[in-house]
Every structure is written in C-alpha cells, then in structure tokens.
Length: 216
Image 1 (cartoon, rainbow, N blue to C red):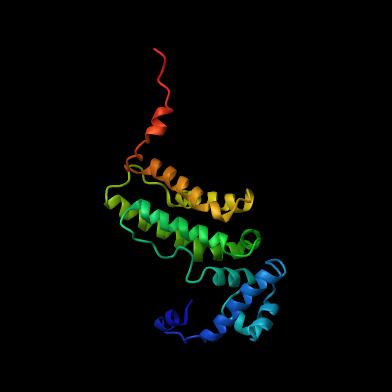
Image 2 (cartoon, helix red, strand yellow):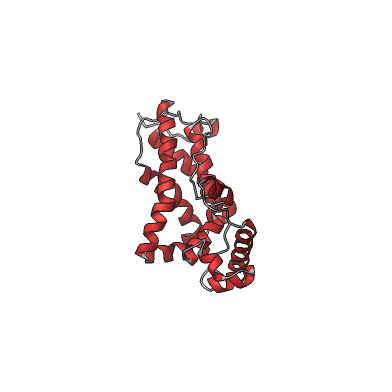
C-alpha cells in the first residue's frame, strides 16, 4: 500500500524512504542470492532498517517479495482501451511483464511456497486473485455492453487461460521471454475466437492458395 493511499484511508503515512530501501534490497538480493536464499534479515541489513520495519509492512517473506515485484496489486485496475481485444491485450502484456521481469527462479519459487501454506494461500487468494477476477469481470461487463460477447467465459477460467500459457512458456518450456509476443498474440486470437463476434482476420492470398479443394 502506498503512503498516499494509506493517508487517504486515515492511517499514518509510512516513510516512503523505508519502503524504497526495502524494495531496492529485495531486488538486489533476488539477483545476487536468488529467491530461496533470500531472508528477511538480509533484506533488513541491506536496506539499513530493523526487521520490525519490514514486518510492519509485510507479514511474510513471500508477501514482501510479491509486493515489491508487483506493487499496487497485480491486475487490480481494469484497462479500458475501447474493445475486448485491446483490454485483454493490455492484461496479457501486464502478465507477461510480471512473469518475465523477476530474476530466474523467483516466480516458480514464490508460487510453490504460497501453495504449500494454506494460510498464506488464503491471504494470497483474497488479496490478489480476488482483485484479478474482479478486473476480468469489469472487462467482460464492458464487452457485453458493447455487444462483443457471444459466450461469456467464467472469470476464473479466463484468468487461467491468460496466466497459464505464459507460465508454461517461461517456466515449463523454458522458452525465451523475447518470443512472448508471439505466444500472447496467438493466445489472444484463440480466446476471442471462443467468446466474441469479432470476425476472423482476412485470409491472405498465400494462405488461400494452400487450401485444398475437396475431390469431386
């Protein structure tokens, strides 16, 4: 939570310099020692703050890292770009950037720890997944109002369709982040083909020439 947002809610604003020092220390240590070896004590020492200052902001190491890597809650604001395609493209770009930017091993390690701890997973689901699903609901509501949807997908299923392939591409298949635009473009086309009245892209002469006519 930013100091400005905390002030609006009536709480005492936190010292943004401490927030910045913690964030910088987390990012440096993730690069230097990796996710598994990073500790709250090391972050406190690198940031020049007491561990109590960190625990006032983050209940666990996992929440600290997630908050640093994805400030202001991941996918908490629904983009409004005028069409379902543009809105989902913006969401996919945010997902791809969030997964590809952290040092190697960070995202898989973080998610493994979250899902190994039921209490931590509950907090993660409430704080982050709930916001993501609400974002997708808002996007789908606008698309429906514009008459773009022929089939309205379940927000949880849509969330999986958006996040899962990017995760698989980067961490299961170990493909290059540089090729993510190819994946996300194909993924966007597939999702829209299943849910909208958007016409298919025009067929090129080269593609048409490859279509074989049935034998008579």
